[in-house]
Image (cartoon, rainbow, N blue to C red; front, side, top):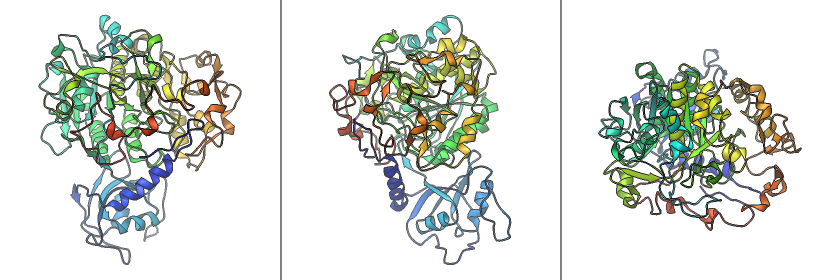
Length: 593
C-alpha cells in the first residue's frame, strides 16, 4: 500500500487506499476455500447463479451485535446472529459457507455480481483476504537514537524483569499460552513436556511442524527454556505450557477466515487446555471500524471468554494511523517494538521507526498500549524452514535465529502476561492488562501514539499492587456509530489514559513529563478541537504542536531521514530479516503488513 506522507504535517491517504484496495480485492476474483455446503432458495429476482462471473472470497455481516435489520419476508425483524439465514434468502443454491462462534460474519465464496446485491440489502461485505500476515521486518534497521548497529541480543528477559521473576520462582508455570501462527516445531527440546495440544487449520496434518519458521520463533520468545542453546537464549516465561494453533503452511499464507477459525478454536478448547493467553503475531490493514471488523470482533469474543489476547501493532511505522487489525481493537493488548541496543539500561533503549503508530485509522483509539523488545532478538531456529533457508546469515550458533518486528514484541508481552497470571492466579484479562500498562516504564519519546504507556515491565506488573483497567467504556463507544471524522476527545474518554476507567492505581499521579493526562488537555491544547478524519489533523500539523514543550521540528520529522534511510522511499519487498530479501516467501501483493 502506498502511503503519502509529509513530515511537516503527516497527511496521508490510508483510508482512501484501504477503500480502494477493498474494491480491488472484491473485483479481483480471489478464490476461496469451501468448508461446507448450504442449499438455500434464491428469493430475489434476477439473482446471479454461481456460474455467473468470477467468484470472490468475502466475509458478510448484516449488523453490529444486537442490532436489528430490515424485516424478512414474513415481517419478522432479524439480528446479526441470523446472518446465515438471511443469506439463504439472497444467495443462489449450492454456495459453500463457513460460520463462526466469535462473530456474526459468514465466510462465503460468491459471484462478484452478488456483492452489490448484499450491500444493497444492508450487509457489510469485507474481503476474506489471502496473504502472509505474519509481522516481521529487517533485523538491521537502526532506531532513531541508536548510533551503531545492534548485534543479536538475548537481553529481553533482563530488560523486562523476567529473569528476576524466574529467580524468585515465577517462570509462568501453571499457565497456557496459545500461539496462533505457522505451527511450532515439537521436536525441539526447548518445549519438551510443555507443548500440550493444538490444531492444524492450514490444511496440513500436524500443528507440531512449522515449514515457515515464524511460529517456532514466536513460541521460543514466549516460553523457550534454552535447552537448545545451553541456557543462553531463554524465553520470557520458560515454565508456561504452549498450544499450537497452526493457520499457515510453508509459504506463510493464510486467510482472515482461517485466523478467525483459529480464534474460535482457542475459545472452544479453553477449558480442555487451560488456555489463559492467546498470542497473535500477525495483522492486516483494517477495512472498517472495530465494531464491524471481523478480526476485531473475533478477538473481543476471546477476551470476553476470559482469554488475555496480545496482538502485534504492525510494522508500517513511523506514520500515524498504521496500527493493523486486530491490534486496532480497544480491548486487546497491542504491542509495539523498541530496541534495547544490547543494554539492560532503559536509558539506552530507543523506539523503532518500523513499529506502527496510532491513533487507529477508523476509530481514533489510542494505540499501541505499550512497547516491548523487538529489534534483533534471538529465538529458536526451525531447521529447514522457509525463513531459515532464505536467510542463512541470520542463524545464531547452531539452533537459534535473529529477527525483528512487532510480532516478536507481542510474543514477549504474551510471556509477560503468563508471568503476571502465574504470580496472581485467577485474575481477569482486564486486570492483567491493567498491571502491564500501569507498571510500564516511561518511554524514550513520551509519545503515547508511538510507545503507549512505555516499556514493558513484567516484574513490577507481576509483583505490584492490583491495577484493573475497566474496558466497559470502550465497548460502549464501539457500539456507537462511527462518524467520518473522529473526535480525539471522544477516543480519549474510553481509553486507558482516562483515570475514571481504573481502580487500584493512582493515575492522577502519573504524568508525561509533568503534563497530566488526567486533566484532559495536552499542554493546554485540548483534543476536543481536533479531529481524526483519516487524512490529516484538520489542518494542524505535528510541527505546530508541542509535545511537552519539545517540538517535533527539533527531531527528524521535518525533512531529515531516519538514520539515513528514507522510509517513504522504502518498499516492503526490499526489507528482510537480516538485510537480504524475502526470496523464499511470497507476499502475494496483498495488504499484509
